[in-house]
Length: 166
Image (cartoon, rainbow, N blue to C red; front, side, top):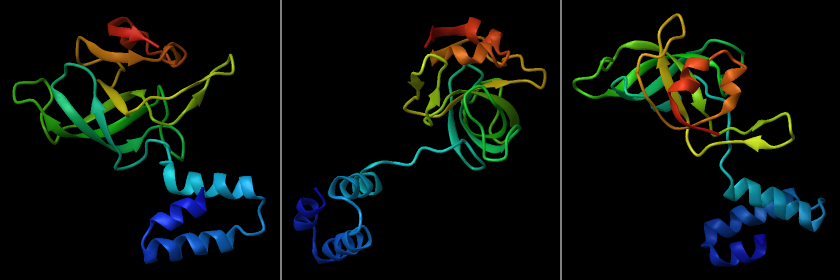
C-alpha cells in the first residue's frame, strides 16, 4: 500500500514515504501499512477544546460559535458537556447577536464515545445547542439527531425539543 502510493507521488512524496518506510522498518508489514495508512488518510478526532468552531443546531439566531472554554475536564468537552462560547456568525433578527458570549451544550461531536452495550457513537460534525446559565435552551427547536446520552447529563429539555434521538 505504501509502496504503490509512493510510486504515484512526486520526488518529494517519495522521500517522505521512504522516510516513513525507514522509521517503521522493524514493524511487521501489516502494522506498517496500518500505521502509514492512519498517518496519511485518517483525520484525528479530538475533544472540543478552546478555539473549536461549532455549528449551532437550534433556532436561537446563531449559526456558528467558537469555544472559549469547556466547563468540565482538562482535555476538553464531549457529548453532553457544557461550554462557554462566542458567537461568530448570527442571523440579523435572531435572539443572539454576533460577539455575544453564551453557554452551550454539545449535542454532536466528531469524537467517538462508547455506549454501555459496546457500540460507539460519533457524528460528522461538532454541534451545540445554546442554553442560559440555568441550562434551559434559548431556542424553541433543535434540528438534526441528538444522542440519548444527554438524558444522563440532565439535559432532558433538549431531548424534548429534538426532532430525532439517536
